[in-house]
Image 1 (cartoon, rainbow, N blue to C red):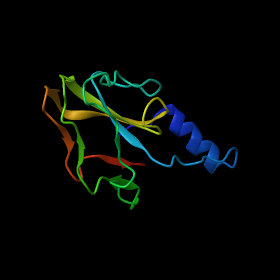
Image 2 (image 1 turned 135 degrees about the vertical axis):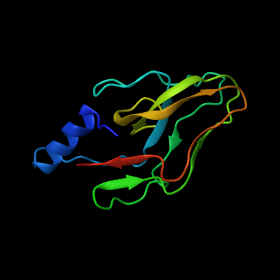
Image 3 (image 1 turned 90 degrees about the vertical axis):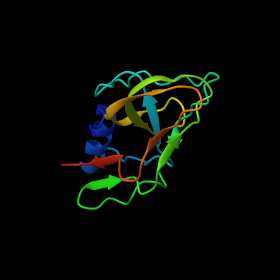
Length: 131
């Protein structure tokens, strides 16, 4: 999963002794209908009367080992109370709304979410790594 420029800069400054990076208390995954870039998040699902909200993932993610971390438990969005559209991408943020994008990625297959549907990352399907 690619890292945003925001996170790259924070980690480099921290590792080089320039400025300490204070880790977020909680990180959240967001469902997106368009792709992100290294500098800009894609289009997030609307929260207005849709039943959508970013999902906190801090507790679900494993401690890093060999430069990688993955969700140890399922992460579930929904059920939707209205259509969310075609979910193609996701991003991880340092806030429940707004905030800074840290990581981003594309789903292996797009998923159309209609009313009463859920979006789910099964255990082990959301992973991060540094190489």
